[in-house]
Length: 298
Image 1 (tube, rainbow, N blue to C red):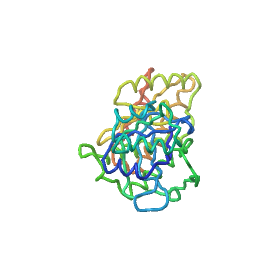
Image 2: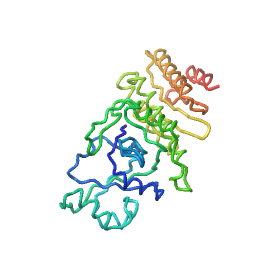
Image 3: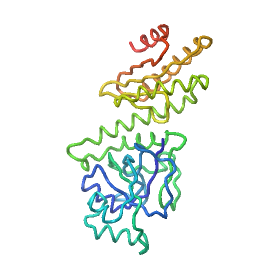
Image 4: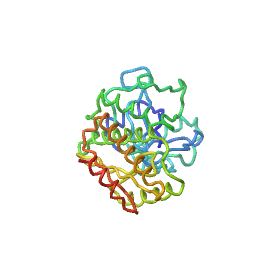
């Protein structure tokens, strides 16, 4: 799981905002450094100067979808104004200027979805982030710890989400709240540390969890290979595999209960305002554990 700060041209970004685009395309010159750890659904924060400011901050974000190799003509034909310019000529001139007249045949383009703009920027020093002064492309924010993303989203939540720039048929607040929730859970999971169990038990748990997430309503908590989540309007469902051998059954039960109580307490502290429901995933039935989890759910 990764979030990045991406240096973004303020004029182009303002055009995207005024057009109320929810999906956009960013072009990148091939000479710039490539992503090494960035996957579908990860957050790309727009690091740019705000409309009325002199220093750069996080002015919004979008979800990474995919990388596309496109010529300028293909970019304009397929995405038009979602490139951030109102004509193919303006797009060409922007690329020509950046490439210093050495325009590659095809450019590496980032297709982004679920765009959210903030009412006011979140500055790095407000969320304890150290961004290089002369950053030219991008930098990772929370490669090893999702807390930075949570801090940015929490600060943006206090400042407010720009509802004016949203597509009238979509609500960016819903997107924002879901992102906040997912990264809070990722933070909780990260703080719990390594999975319990033997290597064989962990492999079995991973398989059980993959079977659960085959249902599109379920997904992994970001950064986890075992803990599954389903989010509904008024409830959060967490399904966690339980794998044990006869000799370590009692130990695994204690570890499992400790794990879900850790989730429960932290989620309540985060004021997620949803009912929390836990589900035991197991191949060998354990009535003792299921009864304990049932009481926690009540």
